[in-house]
Length: 246
Length: 229
Image 1: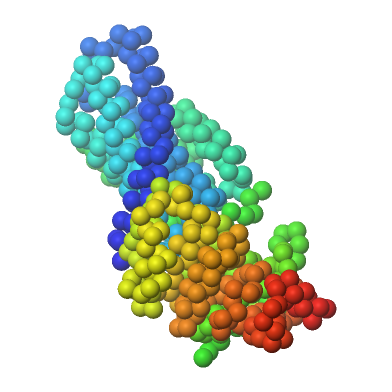
Image 2 (image 1 turned 60 degrees about the vertical axis):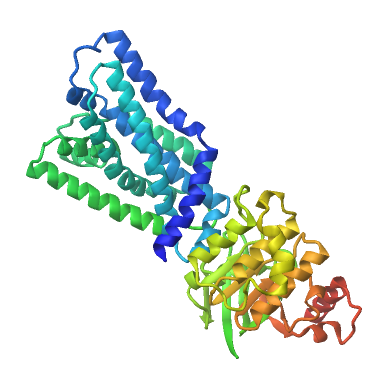
């Protein structure tokens, strides 16, 4: 029955996604333009291996994942809550979780498509095509996107208005990107930095590329555990009523 | 017949109190219609029953968990390009069917079938409500809540909606809020006049109209208000 519910909601979210196709283009715009600018201005196109390329472009691959998780899942959940869909669907299905899983499923498909387009574009620009690495990007996206989406539902508990939350989310997206891979000697800050979705995605890529040390595996396991716990608690606590936001 | 009861209910919104020691009960099975002035807290009461809101205090007895309730809100959220058939299929796919609502009865054939192939955004307000009320009644739940299902609906569709609610109330507890009473004349509904404090009084339709057949909604409403005063 649970899978039937997810399947039913998936059809709903596919219709929603098809109605908002422009978002796909918008998410790709910034990474594609920036990569194009770098590629054309630095004349690096002929000097890069496929592995080097995918490592170099990981901030943008991660940006596509994080921005889709934020816009397509977290903020979209709030939009369905504010329009009354979330509570209506809750009573039809008897649970709030099938809706989130269905949306994640649809958005995972979309973000895989976006990252395929972006990676193929980068590989074309730098003359470094590799089918194996293209598949690695797909795998990376499929593994990290649901976890990042779940984690980002925590922003729905912030006591701010919908439009403020949207602005806050976009700012967070940019700030975290700017802080990506910044090194510090402070242990606490280093620990917190590992919780950044960008860092998580980059660390997962390193694991996939063979950087399998006990330390990296441990950090990955802890981050995944924190993402799951924070995400589950946040979404379970989300008020289905559109009331009480300051 | 058992009862669903709420006793000594207290609840306040952040800026104003809503319920002060209110008590109310509902028949199980049975159709209960909550009446009351605008802003008295009819919708809030449904929100409290469905756990969308938490009471300050109060004893709830006999109510199923929220996951086993069906709640149709006054403002119906719908995907405009969905057809009536897709809506029905979605509801049925997620739940066991209610055996009291089958596709071979006259009501389904004459009222629901013509709506199935049409997109929800081309239905009239009344047809849309009929579609949602029927789709909700046709799934098996332990309690059904309908917030103002007759509001803004033409008289013919009001009759359709009331007939669905009445049929549903034969075997299930059904709680409805409304300002409109007359369409319930031929039903076995119990009417609860909600006030911000104290117990809600229960009436049959005959008691509301004092046995008269020509009472209007206004007559009934003013009569209840005077009685309460």
